[in-house]
Amino acid sequence: MDVQGQGPAVVSPPAGATDARPIVIALHAHATSARQACENWRRATGPVPFLLCPHGVPSHAPEGAPVTLGSVDQTVREVRAALAALRQKYAEYLAPGPVVIAGYSLGAKVAVGVLSNLASEASLAIWGEGGFDDLTSSVVRGYADHGLRRALLLCRTRACEMSYAPVAKRFEASGVEVRIASAATTGHPFEGKVVETARDAWPWLVRDDPRFGGDP
Image 1 (cartoon, rainbow, N blue to C red):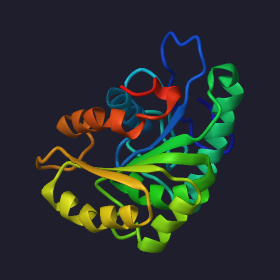
Image 2 (spheres, rainbow, N blue to C red):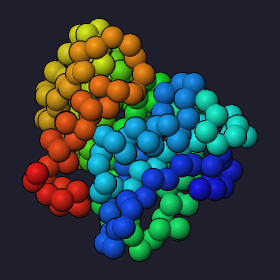
Image 3 (tube, helix red, strand yellow):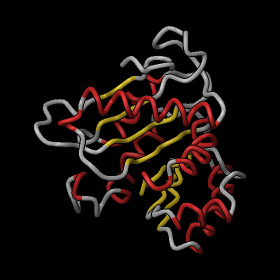
Image 4 (spheres, rainbow, N blue to C red):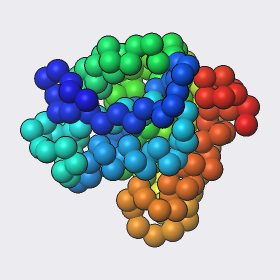
């Protein structure tokens, strides 16, 4: 999907949808692509939502080529522009209400700042294998004050589990429901077993949002 002033975003629409659906914004890792991110998050989230995967930088890189993400400010601009393009193209199929923001590795680190800028527009979020030091008590309290209800902390490694343990306590102290879901494997990329782990935890994250089909 063309995005004004940015690289082309990848959109994975809910095939066959005849009613309005919610939006999941997925921020990819370094040296990967928006297409790869959308393919794996589709496996994780199932058939219901629209998936919006911003291109990243450099913006002129061919679609599908490995890219990275820009600064938080750059990514916020890209996300807002991509959302505007999505809403213009698929207006009648998009459900009103907050979006879900998901980020993995570098995407998780950048998602910390993106969510701070879009806090009133998101009530659910996923961080995977990144953003550990950026999710401070004050940042987490800010999310809670703006309506974040639930956070999924996704891991592929034991080191990630240990790094997210104090983060989970910060969410709990702020009144945000939180869960650490781990594939307990080695490696780092968002693929394979960690995608299955995200898929298994997804119903918990969206369980009381009727736009996702309600209580599983």
